[in-house]
Length: 354
Ligand code: NAI
Ligand code: MG
View 1 (cartoon, rainbow, N blue to C red):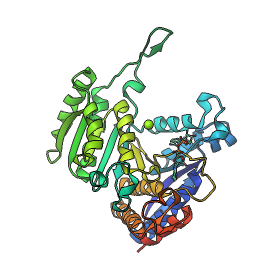
View 2 (view 1 turned 180 degrees about the horizontal axis):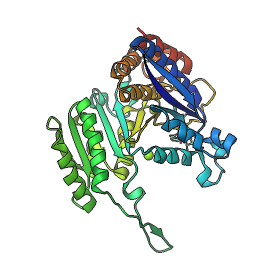
View 3 (view 1 turned 30 degrees about the horizontal axis):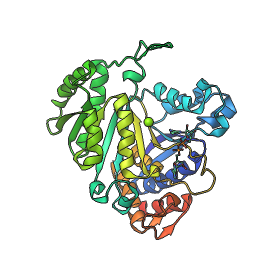
View 4 (view 1 turned 180 degrees about the vertical axis):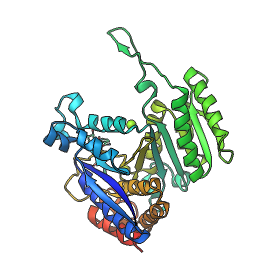
């Protein structure tokens, strides 16, 4: 039987509650699909600060590097808000991403028909949306040197190399091959030289994927199109700063933060986490929505080559939502029964095991 080693980083706040539900669901499909998942837990964020005085201990990095994938909850909370900056929980996640070489962030915005009313956009605009944003995560203006600030002047530098563009473009085209075979590359080529190079390299990579349709779009237009007609998109490929903004915009099409998964890949081992944080305001109350984390676990299975098992999880979520089960955050959207975090996890696990 195939065996996958999973590093489990539950983190803080609702992190442990939602990751436990994802594991429940993973185990339900693993036994059905004939593979085994071996979990090893490591500390990250505030809980690692409490024990090691370090938000991302070496042991955690080593454990992740020795695994096939990382399942991550969320980190942070008021308890650690006054810790010095480089020791804050959030810096632990940045260090982890860097140590694992995760240069590609993938954020799908999937609409569940049962929840079209949860979006602030009109149901007819969002029904049937199935898009994903592929954002470059370790280059561009957030990391470019030189950078500088004094009282009268400040600057940052946007840099991308051919290699950096090529590798993120490949990730986007591979995604498109698994999906609906369209890539929209977003840039600002009418103003930025970086974007000119971006376009050249993306065009070259596209030649290796003749089945995939490629279009280029300026970022200002892309921001408009995302709310005007999001159905036109399949894979949106973009750099770090534009991707930061567009991926948040795209995620809000769906309406609820408790539904949105993400994958960070590119290095030796992929990391899978919900896009939301540790929600300290609801931690320990059993009301957090575990679906974002369960969908992240499904993306992890796709990544491990167990796509059929990933699909089973996504189907199970659809069935459970169609039956009207909702966690508290979605209670006002066609709920027949409001359930707790663990009840939602158990329902999805039961349906996924069928
Ligand atoms: P947040 O995403 O934790 O919460 C925002 C709002 O959404 C809250 O009202 C929360 O209750 C709600 N919410 C979030 N996830 C939910 C879920 N699964 N089910 C139901 N409701 C949910 O963002 P916030 O409040 O800005 O940050 C809280 C802490 O999380 C901070 O320490 C922040 O730094 C950290 N954070 C960590 C991230 C990570 O681990 N990747 C990402 C974002 C924030
Ligand atoms: Mg952001």
